Image 1 (cartoon, helix red, strand yellow):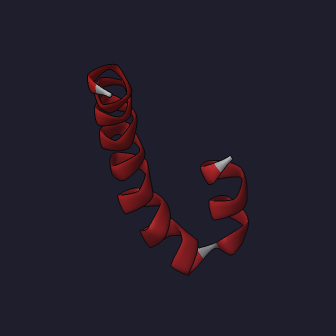
Image 2 (cartoon, one colour):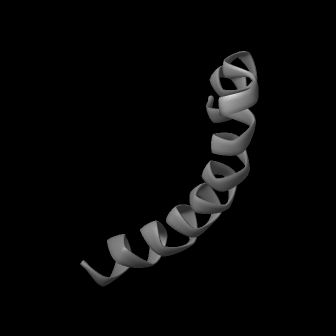
Length: 38
């Protein structure tokens, strides 16, 4: 379980950073959110 949490820790942190800017850009351009999230 510790191994799974360690892998999710860094993954969730990086995704959170991309979600913040992506959400802002998504409101302005939904087209950017689609390719940006993928």
